[in-house]
Length: 554
Image (cartoon, rainbow, N blue to C red; front, side, top):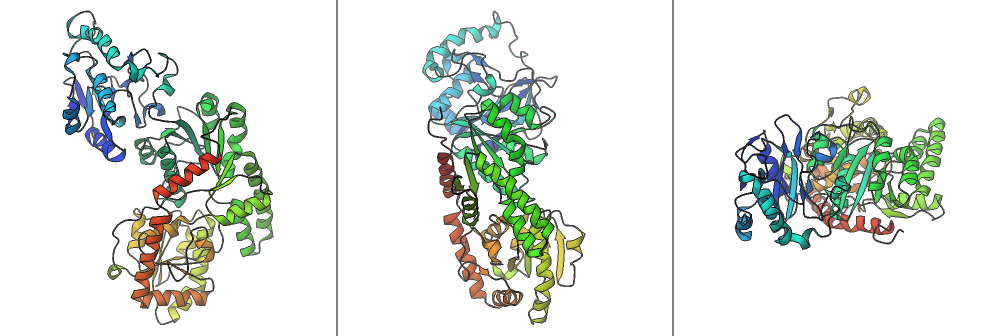
């Protein structure tokens, strides 16, 4: 049921956004809109109740587009001008309290009743409602209905004193006080906001933020490019992540100057991002822990590519990357790495002094996937801004596809992915179809019989392989592509290296339906166990324990 004042004007999507909160978060009892004045100023972005028992309309008369007002969060109370709650809960707690009649503090009291019943109360900024405040009952607190604002204030304080006793001093640091239901704050820093439909690294970043949230932390995200990327940024905000962007802050340095001390930990992805911020973080937030996700070990990827191409210039650059990356690894508190291979390499180069913890990767395995009957041909999916993808599929097109065409079982290959350049488009033949970006990545898996990952270089875990296995398409892959996943060739995939072995493996999966079904089933069963959200949450908790996030840091 929705409650809406008679002095409001709703905007497109306001109701859907409130409904979404009940689907998105656990045990939601109440969801409330962002309220604006008729002139567009912010009226209320989720209320604060201070330790004095006095409520605040957070953000009143501020810019409603500021990052701090634009992410979903738990709030002390939600204005009764526009809110939603389950009718069953309304009836369970008795609706609005008669003690607060005829009005004022009835919505604040209702939110506290909802939480006392074990439910959460969420501010939903994607739901925007204009509120013509004062048109119903005026603004003079000494006359008319408005006087009940002061009549009901002491009633509320007496009733809920124990509930707000631990809240902060009135007016002190409201930007921190507004966040309820958290155990701490973590700032994620990367080079750009994640776009999960563009690359696997973005998918990983989103899952890692979800995992950290599930441990009870409020997550804030800032990128070195300070971009607001439309729906990608908005999706993060809907998920409860505060996203920092220009023009409200012009660069990461400015944001850290103002807010570094707000955070218990910094979660930095990629060594070159860490190079830009690490010194400032250590100086301004010396007690905070720094968790470094290397994404993949860049120098290992570069070394492999240089050796694969016998390029001495690239080898020199890889050695320089190694020096820079290891300097970062030695300077942080915990290093997250996706694979045991990278773990071993890091420990070898740091003489075992680095604290390295396996980084979780979450795979969502659907209950049902398309059957074999509708699938045809081979597929590959990858971002072609990433050199190993370009290198690998080019090698495959030049060395495997001609042998496959001559084998008597020619199969078309469709190449999907963002950032496709003229070099990949030039691979086009009657059997090779460069498609480019695909809106639904699942289509790259569901339409085809076999997924190939012919990676010759690279490092880290391969999200494309995990995504394919989850969709039930058997994979033929190189050892490099299998790294860090724990796959067994012949059981849940086929791992090959030489061109002739590629042809044999593809031919087997093309002609043997029993093998196809066996690999598909085994891989999905394995992912459900090893890459579940629950397993990832336990692994992320171990990483936070290694960073002493639950101990005394002085």
